[in-house]
Amino acid sequence: MHVEDLLRLESLDLTLLWGEPPLLAREISGVTATDLEEPGRFLQRGEIVLSGLVWWSAADEEATADRFVAALRGAGAAALLAGEETHGRVPEVLVDACRRHGIALLSVPVHTSFRAITDTVYLRQWGDLSRRPAASYALPENVRGELSRLLAEGTDPATLLTRAVAHLGTPPCHVLSATGRTIARTPTARALSAAEASRQSASALRVDPEASPYGQWFLHLPGEVEVPPRMLHEIAEVFAQYRQGALRREAAAQAPARELLALIEAERSAAAPLAAALRACGLPERGPYTVMVMATGAEERTETDALREVLRHLAGHRFVTARLTGGGTAAVIAGADAEVAAAEDTGAGAADSGSPGGSPDGVVAALRGLWPALRACDEAALPYGGISAPAATPADLNGALVQARYALTAARRAEGPNLTAVDDLTTLEALLSGLPTDVRTAFGIHALGPLADDSNPSHRMLLETLDTFLTHNGSWARTAEALHLHVNTVHYRIGRVELLTGRDLARLDHKLDLKAALLCR
Image (cartoon, rainbow, N blue to C red):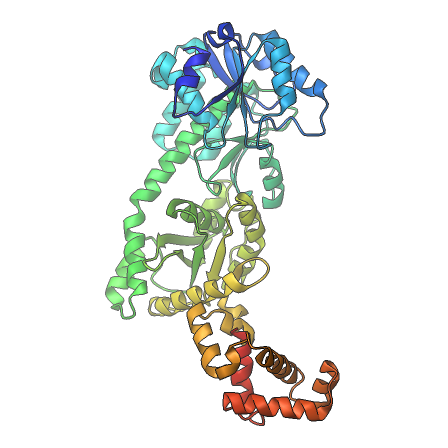
């Protein structure tokens, strides 16, 4: 395969930024992805180099780009494929450096993954990856054979990672999730908190670039451990296969979860089918349970990834997720189970993340602490979550789902973390925030009467007076002082409000009606 062949593939959508015909005719021997400033010692002649340009910033001098491209030329690289995602474009200084050193430069759009390019090259040149010549691999043949066997046997990720780097002396190494959950670590690697793991993953290698922002895994080795980039990519490919296998198993288990949520959505579900559905999902038949509903505005798979990822931080809690018929994705979370927590501990998963188990209150607190990390996964989306109060029995699950949906609506209106528990709705304003927009609007119109038309300047003045009057607990003097009016003027305006709305502001219930109407505007 030649460099120019990549440009002809519409599926990759690459753009030639610089390259003369002889350079485009160069044969490609392999692919290496790197973001090292000077990657020359890890490259082999004839390889194309994929770079996300993380090593470059707008403040860098021209010499930085020049050193990078000079290293490619010294190693005999066939071409440089530069990603546009990090900076929004390929810097002009890099184009100039490639022109000076005679390296063809192609830009990679955001929607084209490096993995797609890698797979295209190897599939075109050697057919299926499993039939590649041994010389084209960086991992030793015996290691590749052992990892293939372990994958087929369904070995846990910690063992898989330890065997993958054993020939390197088993250096400290982690596989981390998008929100800082430790999926696997070698025996020499220390436990990381979720916050520290999130920081480490920023400079780590993506395991599966095709995954959603919430489903990403990252392979992290400390900077002092020198491993050829191609070897890292081959180890990452092993975990991409492991992850895909796990996703297939999850998809196969989704039918019972969908059936359970359908029964919960139904207002009157018989006890026996509900108990059977809980058993089919591996959930206990006795509570407590917590129901959570999430909405991101993203496609179903991405939303499901987000919900599952944040819930996997909860040590000892079994859960299932499914799409709701009315939109959004819901989870039923069982109470903490010591046996489940112990099993997760041995997998170096939730325990390494500093994840809490325990009470329903602990679940809410844990999810609230994790929400900023979840939001950071995808800046283009904003996840909202609603959490129910504990449901003591399976019969209470329908009510818990109603609560979670109500809390979700309130979360959409709230400022802050965009995660609301029904127990947070302790004020009139918070309670009203969970009402659907159409209901809020209708109530405001009917309660305020003609005053609901705030396009009328006189009505706006009366609404301001009413709001101030209610805020100051019906005090004529303090309302007059706040509005810089005479008390008689306040009396006149409130009289007009009572006339137009049909309410008596000497009555507490009528005051509450109008306060609620103002909050619903």
